[in-house]
Length: 120
Image (cartoon, rainbow, N blue to C red; front, top):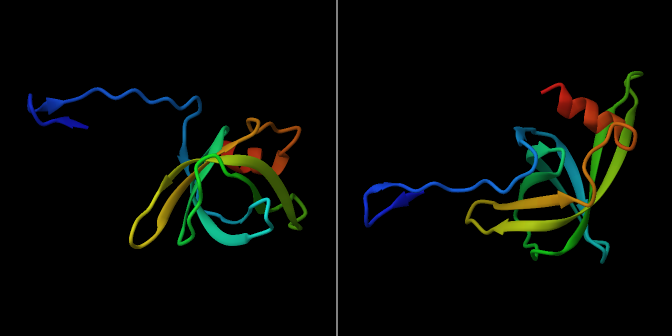
């Protein structure tokens, strides 16, 4: 961010508790009304995920993000993680959406996703 009056950079505070890393994976995002959207993530952390789409979301809207991942036997498994929309930025080409998980990723509850994130 840049302070136009003083022509100097302005310090911003990052409020994230978890570091984000690039993470490009297909996911399904479902709303309580049953609307399901197939999209792709942009980044992930232990506390949430970002994705792009052409659909609008409301900040505070609950969602479930379903990740399809391969287990050690190369079988496709799904891990469904509930969360809520905490950021929505509309754009002409694609909207950016940030979802905060209801609870941080933990290997005992989401083993495949935790493993995939920790490999990055």
